[in-house]
Image 1 (cartoon, rainbow, N blue to C red):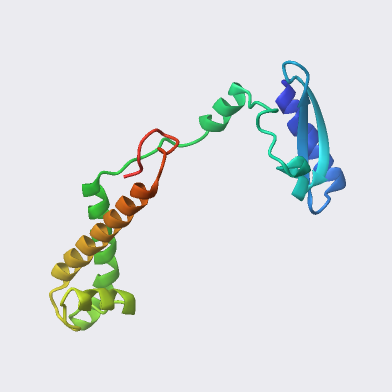
Image 2: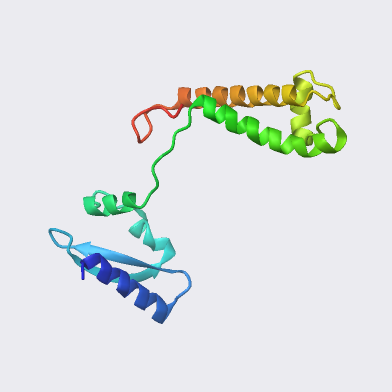
Length: 165
């Protein structure tokens, strides 16, 4: 049985046996290759920052642990701007169609109606798809402007090596 499986089993046993509220199981690794490990239950306040300090330089993360963490994750799906626009249109159409079918004109929530008024639309206007396109364009432009402002304030690149927009 690998060391990590043995520790996982040990953690399950300790939690089942003691089940202490506010306590967190941690594993202390020692030795020159970090193979000597000891399981402890500590208060949750001490679990991440023992002695009030982060001890990251002292405890290197083994590469196999990082690989196991990333192995179960789904792949990152990046949508193009056109795909984001289409999803937004589809959601707005689905929301607005409920009232459009019932009344002959879309009845939007107050926040959306305020946005439409700012764009020059009158309440009760039956041109549903034109309203949806105007709203989608407004929301996409607002999102792009917010992202551009956020990226302008970033002093370094994100973890994946490029800006988020």
